[in-house]
Image (cartoon, rainbow, N blue to C red; front, side, top):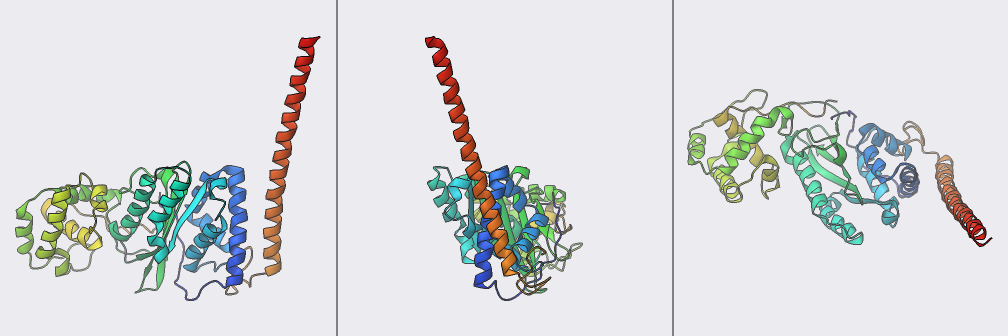
Length: 365
């Protein structure tokens, strides 16, 4: 399921306005072509492919390797299809920073527009973000979340986190059609610069740990807190020395009280509880290992420009004339295909009318 690997160094600056405007127009033409040829669901499939997504960003003319290709490409798609969503059957929500926090509202507004229930889509958006920010603890904090979906409730997520210590970014791809579980190997790809030691609670190797954590969070066992209080320190394999705050009895008691009241039936429901974040899951993981002997996976899940140039001149400066020509050719081709299609429909209707008239003539004679 995890099929991507890409270098994404954090770069300062942003795409100049003239280039972003062109990116919006070209993104619109490409998405319209794919939708017309293959349907809206194919757009989701391609966006969830890290290699196709990277190539798409390169074709749009952004830096071929920087972290900004994620935010700018998603932004160009969102702006490009604005006003065409119902015609295409494709919707784009979320974005960078404050825009990412508006995703649930944007999903709700889009669903109101097409008379569709938004609950499942909002849940998918929130859970995907919760998994990559809390259940996968790899040192990258999410700052971008784009959620794309169709009228048939198919969806994909492209979200990205940053790491202050190494100035690198990590991009996470999700696709609903390949998703069997939100908490067991859910990603279609994770792209980053390098692997590292990671607490991966959604790895298949962590299945027993997920059950143990859920059991721990559901049972009001006061012995748990007594065991934790007796621990002066703890060192676990493949991880740094555990900080006291990770398993602080006072903090853990507060966590357990909230989870006892809600009684999560599984790890997915536990993730949905407000306040259960990275620190909570880390504490519960350590206690679950202590009590049940279950070890969580420390495998890093991230193991795995060419058409118009780039804004920084790499591999070469953006050729504005060629860029405009590409947009024009795509736009004219799509417009022509629509005309040809409508002409075919009218021709078929004329043929049907002609045939019907002939049938009526035969009946009369």
